Image (cartoon, rainbow, N blue to C red; front, side):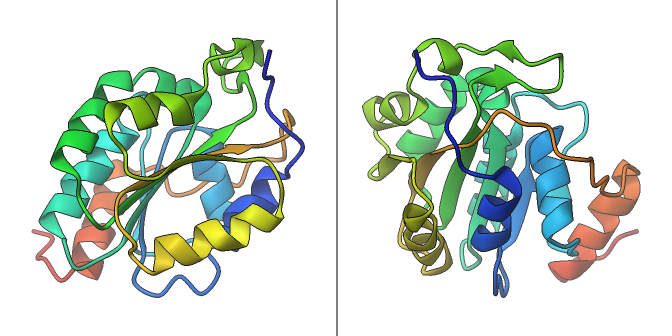
Length: 195
């Protein structure tokens, strides 16, 4: 049984977003959104609300539409478990500017910390590898986060990483919850009209 790890989710996300430049970030619902917000709100953060299972596909859409920008999806194990089919589609499309990072605590954090399938032995990085991701890894030590960050920021091709985090519940850092506002500021940051 693999019930997450020991890494601090907030420290992991802060390290991944350090010196982010033009990095576009799509968040899975719940805790990943809070973690990205805690690392610093940004116009290029696209927070998803009430869209469980769709973060990876939204990331694919943005990576396809913005091929010169690096795109990072930060999501949780429970959310990604709902999107297994997305991994196959993304691997077939193989965008060179997309990285998916799954914060895996082995639990469904938003619904009461019940053990997730990842917490019962499903290894998401292996699923991504079988789907055809050229890079699919599991990070269990803090030393691996800096390497992961460098690959994401270098736009080193399609990648997937499961990061084993502690099953804790830090205070919520709520990002904007108005979907129209998030969409409009995101479009403006990409240089598109908002009307």
